[in-house]
Length: 183
Image (cartoon, rainbow, N blue to C red; front, side, top):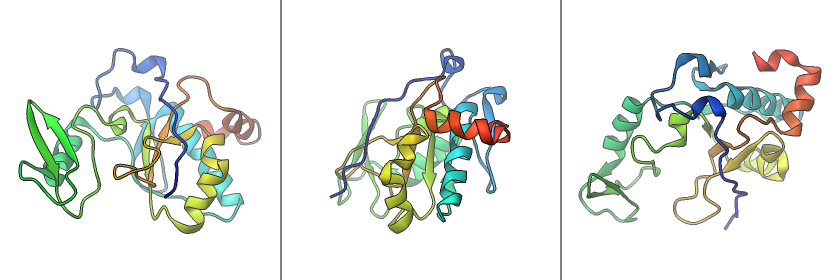
């Protein structure tokens, strides 16, 4: 079983009075080439990570970034039910226990997701060389860590930007050479 490196998130100052999934547009930045947005610091760190991966012959794309509260609620309703399922991964909402439907990946309760802060990203096809490259210290170098070290709720594809307003050395170094990554 893989043990993913985990660190707690340090929240950027501009999220202090924000509400999860209801962020102001000025704290978000579009990321590409696929659609999506992240908090502005996480977007810069993602751009730097993607470029480093490219130079190492690794292609990084995402399948999930910032999620509004409405998107979180819709996904939760698709993935969870009040009926017990095989894996018994549960979430509590308004005093009721919801069970993860078979065949779905876990998801936070609406309003509790780090995607709702614009600080989480889901890597597309995160296995093989991609996962090995991230685990070789490359994700950490740019401020990205996993939320769960191991076990049934660990998601190899789910990374979180944890550095708040202090970009890690990998980001600072990349911006010296490629300042346009902070756009």
